[in-house]
Image 1 (tube, rainbow, N blue to C red):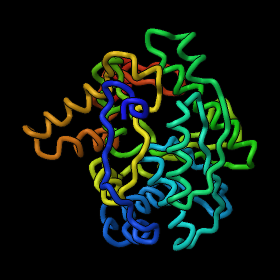
Image 2: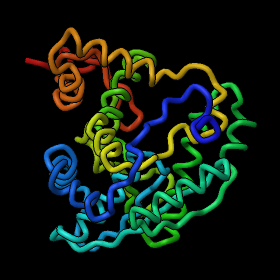
Image 3: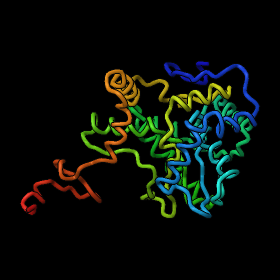
Image 4: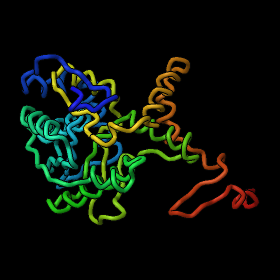
Length: 289
């Protein structure tokens, strides 16, 4: 396991036997409808993430989140009313051969027609930002996915970020960056014209993804980066633990963190930024009646 997971990583261990593909697909619609399918469709409807004629590039890292995202889109194409096309992309940033093999085997078993393209991002990020390569790596991977998506004629890139990613990002920004911003359900790329990033799993909770994955018997990739596996500490894991601890003392604290980004009272904050311009409440204080 250490070759695949990396030292110090927690691997999501499924059941020994994989469910038949038809049962996995049925579970998304039936058994886990309330936890996976319904919040997926709700996010798409609430944030207008999918439109007639879209061509979606679904980014697949091989982890539990992106594998589920791919299956959700396949089910939506089969059962939904909107006509759209899908491409399933996996970028190899320098995976260990065993990791790449597992990624491909999982997608083959799940009936996901994967397109793999190569890069050397792990190596480049480690050389240029050896102390903490994750930020640079993430930016480079996003750029590579945008470029490949546009090359394939896609107008949207779908990522597998979920509810927990959203609230953890909010807390990371508040506690470590001194600002209030969250992970948005969709945004237009600033560097790559003609493509939009979407996060259709915005309402889906990580615990439910883990339960579904274990029930399916799929062994997803986790901590596939051989560089990050050598690093010590991760602020996101600290935030994850903090939120878990807070949930023991405050009912629905995770929901409150999520809702906070929907309920910002502009009249009760000291300052804000819009289009890279800073504003202070004092700029408007004397203008109020």
